[in-house]
Length: 169
Image (tube, rainbow, N blue to C red; front, side):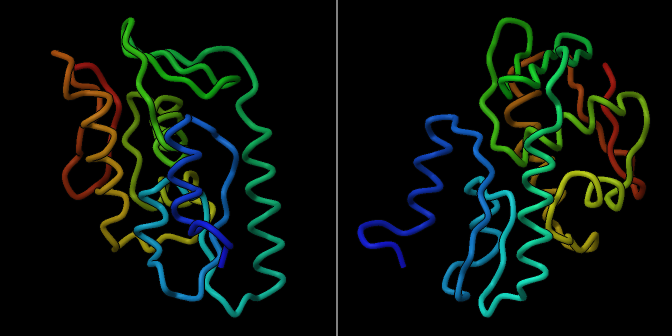
């Protein structure tokens, strides 16, 4: 209900400029959650709002935005700059949405260890994500296209019926 643009348009414009400000989408149901998350939203709430849930989600977004303010995170030829929220594979900068970035950071910090969809949902999404939904698989596809597709060594691997692992192969 913005005067000149939709919230989804504003969100897309923010992400196109690599603006990493946390975004909580509030909707009357006219835009679905997957569309918002794929556009780069960090969280989504549908109206009418539960005030306690809104406060909790805002606190979670603020807490998460204060995290990762340290040294680069590295694995193989992957480098993550947590201060500036930038990612490189070799010399190639990779532009990620906030959700993709958080997911990749989680995988990188757990490199060599298989993480389940439940682990990923609990640690990478501020909104509850049903682990039986395909949203995590969708984000794995997004990450593979951006992080692995143009490189001979693949880093993101599926561990069938268990989860995902970051390893060199």
